[in-house]
Amino acid sequence: MQLKNFEAPSVAHRVRCDRCGKELPHGKTSSAGMISVGFDAGQDSVFGEGNRVEVDLCETCLQVCLGAWLRVRLARDTEQIPREVITTTGGRGQPAAANRDRDRFKHQYGTLTFEEMAGRMECTPEVIREQEAAGQLFAADAQGRGDGPRYPTFQLNENLDRPMLKQIIKEYREAGVSMTRLWSFLRTPQKFFAGFTPMEMLLGCSFPEYEALTPEERCAAFLDLVADELSRTRF
Image 1 (cartoon, rainbow, N blue to C red):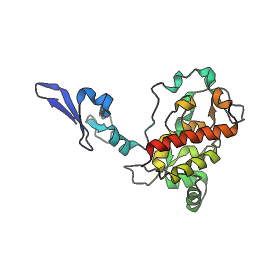
Image 2 (image 1 turned 45 degrees about the vertical axis):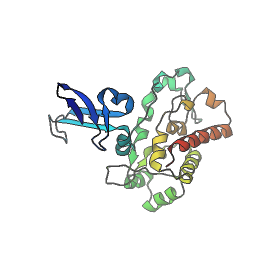
Image 3 (image 1 turned 45 degrees about the horizontal axis):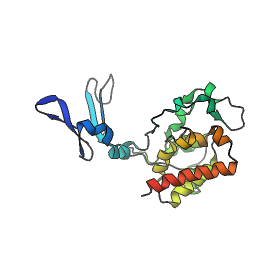
Image 4 (image 1 turned 30 degrees about the vertical axis):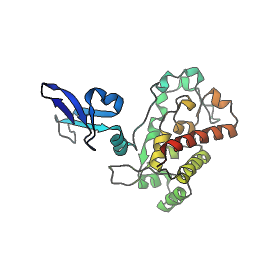
């Protein structure tokens, strides 16, 4: 909610988070972490055509409400990485990323319900539970949804480095950190990975410095990054 000064009714002087009530001076909302969203509902909108929809949330409440779906990007967008240093791996003769659409991973950021995951894997629900218990799959909580935890779609990709994912899941479980935090980490671009997200690296992205490492060194470097993330997010 934007609190306006009566002497200048068109200018909000403070912004209050609609979820927790935290207030910030309007001029500091960007740097202090207040997000304001407003739009006019269109035709056939669930909000009613022509209605104005607004919400103000602090970053903490935004993470709580939408953390399972937020994609955090570096200030330097991945498109700005010199294309000559971006390649792909996997031994399938794939062309360099410079010649490929950088949006090719967008559909990998989706999620599936328990039933949808079983259907895509063509297996029984028991198999899903067994694989999740064994640390081969994970599901993240989806706040605000009534269909239970959701399974990130990328786990069905044939190029996925499954041993590495299993090790990462193990690290998060042993640290007592939620799978929702894991999903957030996997979607966050990393400078160490030249701007790629850990999920994209698990699916086969690479770059010259990473290619120069031995498989053992790559594994160790990846797990070092995971350890650093866990040290900052453990709760």
